[in-house]
Length: 178
Image (cartoon, rainbow, N blue to C red; front, side, top):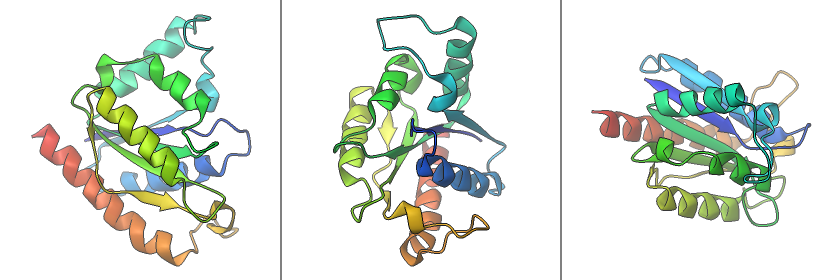
């Protein structure tokens, strides 16, 4: 199976990217996963939808990764109670690529609530575009304290919850794919 991860944190020092990279490594270790495609919105930096044109090659690279994915996992911070505008803008360039595609969301926050509002925002968006959203959730709170200097997660709740979340995500991908 091919899994595409969309890293949705637009800031240069994004802790969301660290979480997304860690989860990508965990998925790569899964014997059912043949490839993990990593899309970082910072690298694409699409112009505001409708106000400019992204490079055709960049647009097609992103589109191809979405089309070939058996499942899409979005890792997003919460900005002002929502998904970041830069992530929403990037997602808006595509629509048919999401139809009936299994999708999961992991939200990241520097605070104690793990980005729950961004999760609800993204779930509503997933329903709108016709994807098949995973009902399980993985909320990453206090992300600044999550990883040690070796890049290993040290937080009890994250270490307890992410394996179950990824298992649920892979179950959904397998069910939709078959």
